[in-house]
Amino acid sequence: MAKQGEAPVLARINSLLVRHSRNPDKLVRQVDRLVNKFGDEVYPHLIFTTAHLEFTKRTAKKHWQEIVAHWEQMGESLNREIDFRVALLDYFIHFNKRIKNPKIIEIKIFQKTQEETFIDELTQLYNYRYFVRSMDVEIIRSNRYNASLSLVIFDVDDFKHYNDTNGHLAGNKALKKLAQVIGKSVRDVDILVRYGGEEFALLLPETSKEGAFVIAERIRQSVARSKFPRGDMQPLKKFSVSGGVATLNVDASTGPDLVKKADQALYRAKSRGKNQIALYEDERRDSDRVGVAIVGRLQVASDQGDIFEVQNVSESGFLFSFHKSIPLGSLLHLSLQIPGRKTPIPCKAKVKRVEEVKKNKIYEIGVRLVQIKQRDEKVYQRLVHSLIQKKKKA
Image 1 (cartoon, rainbow, N blue to C red):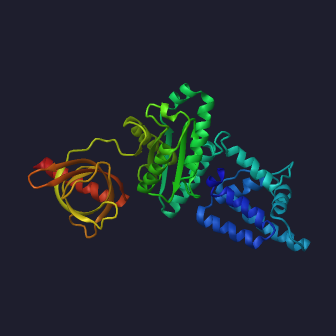
Image 2 (image 1 turned 90 degrees about the vertical axis):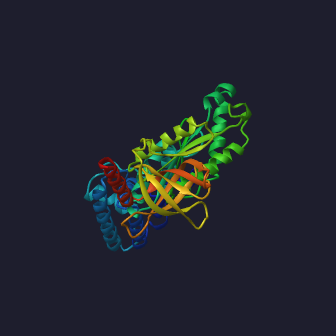
Image 3 (image 1 turned 120 degrees about the horizontal axis):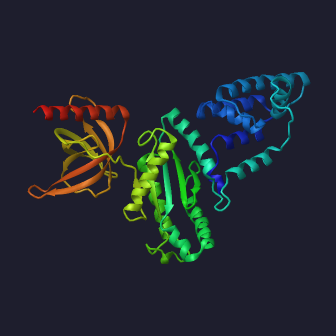
């Protein structure tokens, strides 16, 4: 099962060493491709995997270049193929002199040992240590290519009750089955780990907040449909999970903050009754709403888009009138035509309030912004602040 979460860098380096350790041209080309995709973080991983020496990215890159040159010189001098690891060992023993008592270990044995360091024994998923490493790599890649990265944290609902009722052995069996159920719903690029206890974390590369919600909800439903021993004895009459979703550079800019925001969303899901998925939302109270005349286009699911009229705005959202009701909690794709701006601002918002205006059968829809590009958010906030100032002066 651990295969679905193979480290993006470490697993590929190990594979390259197995396949191209006697071909300098191929190995160098493949390493260059990895660097183009993941950045200079590849070099420390490469040196650590082969020599178990730790260097900064800059120093590791320098060593890599010198090792490659040494490798080529050794091949020419001996007039035969030289394994990359032989050249690396010779370099660090005789030239750089970092290794005094070398130990030879077969690469596949090293891979197995490395995997065991990162594997949770009970569920056979990757563990928290692996999660931290993977998150660092994925954040670098996400920022490098301006790609989305979302995190979902799942927690078993009322797991203490399950353990108290059925015993810890049954609880462990349930966690093993849960890992299998979740594992069937994730992609090869996703990183699923046992975060700790009855919590599981799912890193979703190149996945927006909306996409992460869809995946998390599918997993929640799959767990709720699955048969767990004595699950009907749980408070919700079934074995279930709740989940919290947060997205990099939308809700948080660092790994620890991303975890914090996903955890806060999980807490919200629990407080709302459990067995549900919640998106992270900024908990700041709305500032004073101010009237404004803005038109925009709205999409729900696959609709082509309908015109709506904004009535007032605040720092965290706005109220608009619409010709039909929209379910609470819906995630909307919106396009706002800000006065004085030629191109509309795209954003995503979650429906927080729906109220019918009976006189003309128009609905007032209150939404909270959940995703907007940083530059567009600045334009929106400038508009709100300017309107607030005008209101104060009036």
